[in-house]
Image (cartoon, rainbow, N blue to C red; front, side):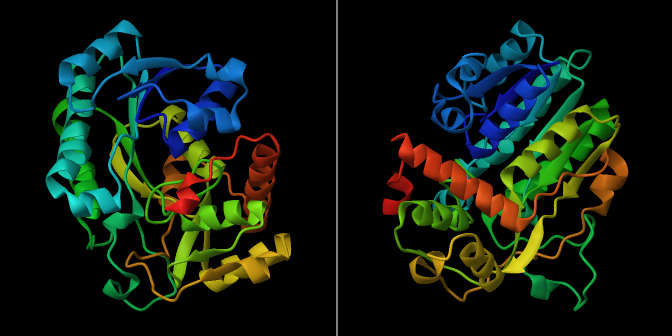
Length: 327
């Protein structure tokens, strides 16, 4: 199994790489520059050295095709993309990377159709509108309800899901899109929903931190999401569909309570706001389990505890980067 990850030096990419190495896969990261600092947060140096690097822009079709051919890539995991704040500030750049870049990925795979067996790409729960856009119901929302994003980023992800279906319809390229919500864990330092992770990091340092928003969200431990990406890459599958992921659907008050149970100092150090993020949070992941198999789910308490312990260990080693807390 030879796997190429676009944007693989990011937070989620690092954890997927970790999972791939556990399967003895051969792994290459395709990114603008070599920057394995997040890999080093969760992997020993000898494993970091096992990961190959290919320099390239995700919008560069000839270079990406060359990378697929040169390394005989059998599976492509597409993570490269710009997050909500960047897409809001520069929608044209956001579209170039998030939409054009995804089209380039599928065009490159089309050129290697007999070699590349599966594409797995990161969509997002941001394809949904706010919970108020959907009928009042305690029933979780399926993958296929009407999508009403409230950001450029969300619409870019909708576009990618649609284009993926057309590549299967027209060219038979099987792909799986996954829609994470708030993914937390060591290495999460960017993006709108990075604040719960930053709160846990601040707690590891004994520092105060205020989460700027409140309300409900779906908290998903990063290793569970990485496991879902790997499962989507290797499970028997033919087609093209985007799937919801589901972790712990809780409000910030519940997150704070569990955080205090894990580490009582959080009661004095960690606070949170009241504003609700405008993305539906009660999502159904039964289609993923039906089509791709059972999912790994770490409890919120276990995920917080593991993240806190890892941050404390990194701090004790003098390797905990705190620049994200200063922003």
